[in-house]
Length: 201
Image 1 (cartoon, rainbow, N blue to C red):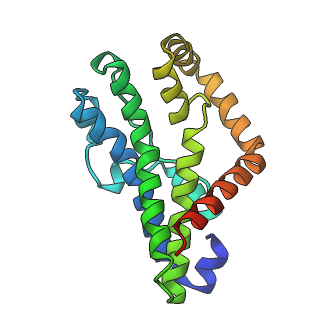
Image 2 (cartoon, helix red, strand yellow; image 1 turned 120 degrees about the horizontal axis):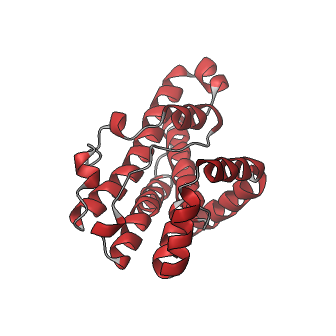
């Protein structure tokens, strides 16, 4: 994925781009729909309970995903007071779980699709969904994993919320993630390989 693919095979680039943007959309929609179903109307009021990609894509995060294969969507805002402790956990987990489901379906399809273009698209969809799932499950402030951990340990959850309210802390986290791209990428690669082996038949 990137400019080289766009220049060498524009059709493949467009198909992959569409699939990757859909993956981010599904991730954010999953957060929104679960929150809505559990009684938090915030995502619906903000127009996030939809599969329209324009409602979920972050310009910078989308550009990064298309060019370097690492990106993010626009976070879904929720009202913790409208959710129970376990409701907050399910809202946080919904995004990564949706990506894991897409990865499983895609991994299974890779066993039966032999067309070169189809294989390229499926590999890209599998990879980006594993990236979104594994990355977001890390217990790092700002990611879904920290919210899951916060729901399991309420006192820690309150501390994480206070941490995230400071914009400077969010910048620090972003710098940390960029600095750790190598180790995080290796982790995602190892988990992806294990998943592919488990799905092979």
